Length: 220
Image (cartoon, rainbow, N blue to C red):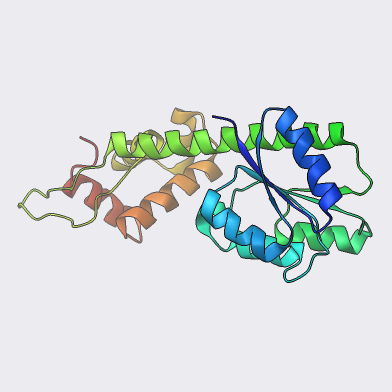
């Protein structure tokens, strides 16, 4: 299945030239003439990347990207701005709205194609790593926990393999520096894992955390 790209521009000639080039490059291409139409297409078709102009009727590019970023499932959608508005403050506004890349008009189609390939490759890597991390968490500990006295937790606790390693060493009374030395991590990185464990177990200190870990058998 080819990746789907959305091209948004109120100029018909620009839309056609970009879409023709991208289709010849092997992509499936959708087009929209303004931000409002594009937003509806993003929600309907879930494109893998969006190329958009800024100055458009009904909804401009800045507003379009801000609306797209409000949806959690589209927060990682790669976005390229193509526009004749290339002053520094306008480029800053583009990045602040959530764009990944800003290419000024006129532009070369080959450069646009290279930028698209780069952003898509990075996006696929990020999404793949996110899925692996989530699946690892489910694999490590995704069952409903049962305490020694038979009580259960309604919400399953999901610990990654690294969090389990840190938790094991915490039960041995090791400091962050000692845990870091054992796991070849910096104390600051260990602190982040400990904070994550506090958050997941709703505990506020090491004693409570160790008690929770032992009580609900998180290390089994």
